Length: 264
Ligand SMILES: NC(=O)c1ccc[n+]([C@@H]2O[C@H](COP(=O)([O-])OP(=O)(O)OC[C@H]3O[C@@H](n4cnc5c(N)ncnc54)[C@H](O)[C@@H]3O)[C@@H](O)[C@H]2O)c1
Image 1 (cartoon, rainbow, N blue to C red):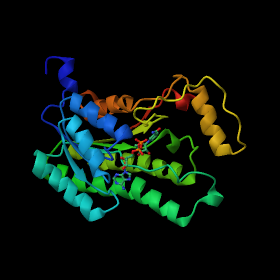
Image 2 (cartoon, rainbow, N blue to C red):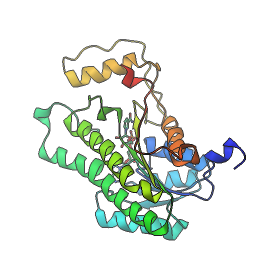
Image 3 (cartoon, helix red, strand yellow):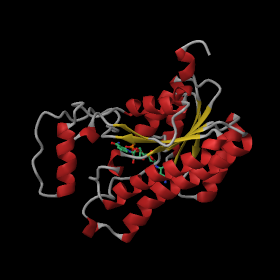
Image 4 (cartoon, rainbow, N blue to C red):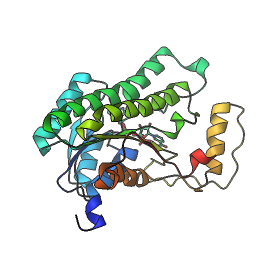
């Protein structure tokens, strides 16, 4: 390698991004493609995944990460269709409709969220690790956690699931390091995912609702040091770092990309 630009170059690499139909996942797909990677975009929303894939000249497939057998098939299909599996980004996750006070959390809400945010991450990590180890690929696995893993606010269901993702990441990093596979967690702070709609500006202090969870989050967004919501592409840039030679000696970390949220 002769230039630093080569460290960031992902030409010849194949990345599988789950939940890539919109939001942060779409930003990650765009950034990886800009760095030269071939991207397999998967999502339960196939139309959205196809839209992302068309934009980044990648490929798309329907995938529900809670379906263990479908996950195994999807990782194999990525190799069959694109030639290898070098980078896995476990981005698919749910939170809307699952937060709030503990007294209102139903068994169904708890199980549904954990099956996507935790079981899904585990199934994808396991399937990808099998491929990478068998192929001798010095791969990268990037699990999307959240600042809520260490600084709660959405509620027990989501916050707990993202802490689990952070610790699964560390355990896997330890186990897979001898295979040359780096495993890291990305911890996004507030990131605006309504494409086409401008994010709200933080010019007015939020009215207090009296509900601690909601008030904590609203107050922190208002006081966010960066002064504005994050953009999905800002998460994508950090994923390119974690997927590239730039981070060759980085494994097992929890990387906040949060505009200073965790300084508050
Ligand atoms: N937006 C934020 O502020 C923020 C902050 C911290 C962490 N995160 C995390 O980032 C990730 C992406 O969040 P986002 O805000 O872009 O969400 P989003 O709702 O905009 O997009 C999530 C995508 O995941 C897909 N998905 C949902 N369930 C799935 C399943 N079972 N299998 C496959 N795909 C599935 C959805 O169809 C959607 O395309 C999530 O893991 C989320 O927890 C987001």
